[in-house]
Length: 272
Ligand SMILES: [Zn+2]
Image: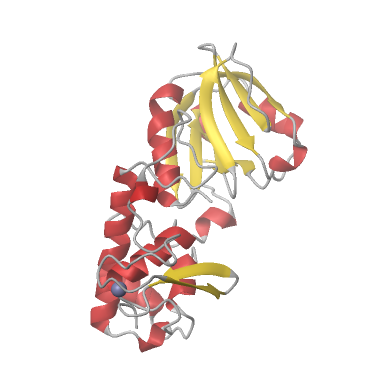
């Protein structure tokens, strides 16, 4: 599933291609992708609007249109978002297209059909966006704020990192990587962490996410950026997907356990 670094990479690759273009019309081949209104109503409301910006919040992309309308896009499991020439045939599983006035199309391809699009008026985001925690790479994400959000919670630290209301944008890959970086076992209860450990985790989250953006995200299977290219951070992962390989810090073998339904990777020696 694309997490913050992948969604941010998509945003950066699509921004220059989309800004300034006008949406002429579109096509929705999987009606359930559109939340709240019919696909027909959705296309009616975006047609004729100019794209003014592409923002990101957590794992959501926010395509801003003239007159204050925003298209929210959630790629979920297998969603891919690209801009392609209109005369290029769409790839299989392309269920959503917006036809632009410069001869290109914004295409949303989604093998598993879990992806969603929705409309809202700028300044009036739906609950799914309102309840998101701070952006981990923005100034609003401070060690003090992180500590406060974690305070008194009994849940396991990995679950806390995956909770989008505590901090936005982290999924399975970067939760495992950040916990390794901080030397914290994924199953530790949040209320057992020392201040030093929370500080280390705070730094680790920022470090891991920034490095992953620099490498344009992690591609295991489906993730592609806005130009259809794979990321490169899969070559730099230290624990995620590395079961049985030597830990880069101590050399013991990386372990994998099932934790809350998610495959969780860690070093049994470095993360106690
Ligand atoms: Zn180790």
